[in-house]
Image 1 (spheres, helix red, strand yellow):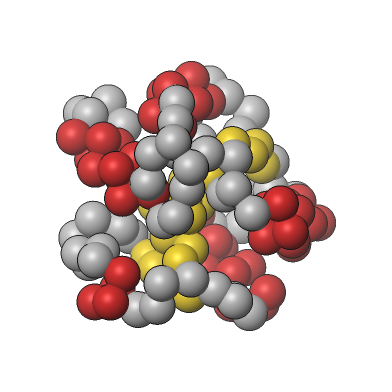
Image 2 (cartoon, helix red, strand yellow):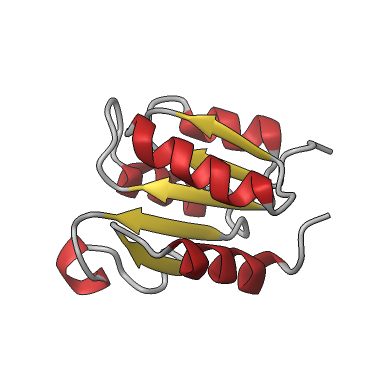
Length: 124
């Protein structure tokens, strides 16, 4: 079992640092991967309780990562929170059944914290 609660897959350093700061301050154990390429390998290795996934990533899009995640029986049940600058679910091409939650960038820090707690319960 991994010590990772959350795997953040985000290529924008400022956003990744903000998410890391917000969530680790609350006690979550977070790892970060900066591109879509090999993201599924990291998910399979770390077995996080939650994946926070950007849509626009280098090497492989977040939608491709999400599709691969849902197609793998050993990973398909992993909860996914999408962070997207592409707008709402309908405009970003994400079907509601694909992701557990979708949050637009820029996001409210308290909303991010509440969403993670709603998805996972309290940290620790």
